[in-house]
Amino acid sequence: MIIYMYRVMCFTNRKLCDEDYIKRLTDIAYSEISATVLREKDLSEDEYYELAKKVNEIYKKAGKTLILHNFYKVAKRLDIDKIHLPLSVLESMNEEERAYFKILGASCHSIEDAVKAQKHGCTYITAGHIYATDCKRGVSPRGLDFLREITHKVDIPVWAIGGISMDNIEEVVSCGAYGGCIMSGFMKNDYETLKSNLFTYFS
Image 1 (cartoon, helix red, strand yellow):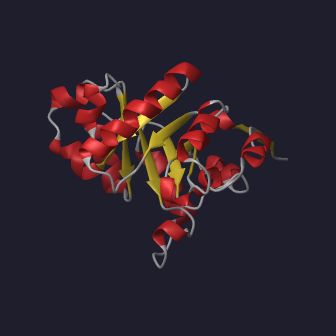
Image 2 (cartoon, rainbow, N blue to C red):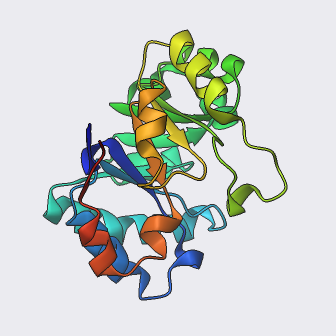
Image 3 (spheres, rainbow, N blue to C red):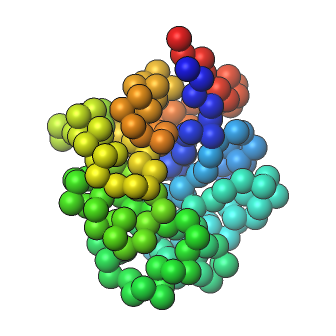
């Protein structure tokens, strides 16, 4: 099987990035990944707006997909119709607000979450965390059986998240996931490593 990088979604975390953050996002924008979710949870809405405005220009020039996170009003201000939300934020929005977005994703941690997300118009969800990860240190991963079950309960693409790498992405795809979300692999690796991972062969 060949898993191309269009089955990989980058989630950002500037605190993990050892080099200039904007340079790293530019490198990622010009790679072959499916999309980038600009996930900087600690920023205020105004701070996030300024960052998203700058990063959006980079992604527009590269012709790649940038998905904003959490701040759906910022997305509307910037005329970006792609957003990834915590389920609680998704549920707080009205139907008209949700309908604005052509790409609408939500983070799901249970079968119930996934069913709710689909009911509220999501075009995809993330499911996790699948493997042990430093981002959820001390919290047991939900594992592959959970991933298999959740992919059978919804009719929209499911992206596995949590501990995903190019070493295990074949495993999550074989369990029914559309692809995998990677954070540290993109934030920590140098650009040469990033380029070498444009696609990976599995036998």
